[in-house]
Image (tube, rainbow, N blue to C red):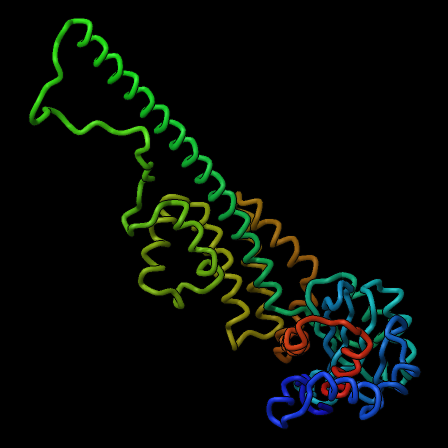
Length: 362
């Protein structure tokens, strides 16, 4: 229980004990939680100064309807000694005030802090770790680029859905018109005293009122709405990672929507800058300037917005090329804590949950 993120109930099957009884005994007697909860205040922040190191990561995560700022040591690799601080909220002043309770000498020794594109996280680091170099996570930069393509994809999908709904309405109206014509024809024949034709009828079979509308399909067998829905994940990957069917779908969509093709290749060029292993901070800066010129010539508002975001954080993004540091360790630690939460089927006691996290990862 002190070394692994397992629940008391999961141990009951192995050791043939009452899970609920053991959980209460661990919380009230076997662990030092009663003394820990008196010493630590979750609202004021949980600090473990001994886990401070030269390389840190910072991120926010939600537990029990509240957002917490989690500071971790990257060199612990998500194991014992990883958690440095857990502070309630993301307000820079509040979080920095809690972090400044740790020894100033240790805080000034921090040389690097990785984070996403959050401005509040940047303010916290500036106030709490004055000597730290900030590295913006390249995966969040790519995510921001993917959001630009996603905006364009959703725009075309909404237009396609709207067009299909219009076609359905026209098709229904056409069926009603055909039904009226058939009714008029039958009534006119009755008035003329003519009998209904027996045997095989000539002409095509009449369309019934409940005939189902079938939208037009593309050459790969998908409708336009289906193709725009299924291309969501593939547009976030490089062309070389696509399957044969995905390449076929992309060729069709890029032919129908040239702007979607332009947006994809612009973001793909940006992705290539970060994937080139030979790039240094200087060469990456030069490559980014070339990418800016390409985007400037484009008329895509969504991609221009991505360019502005990158320009705003450019120097901190380029710090990635010094040691190739990312914020993946923060995402990994968050996922482990959330996986533990799912094993518990939710969090009833926030202080005890954080106590368990501290004993395992702290």
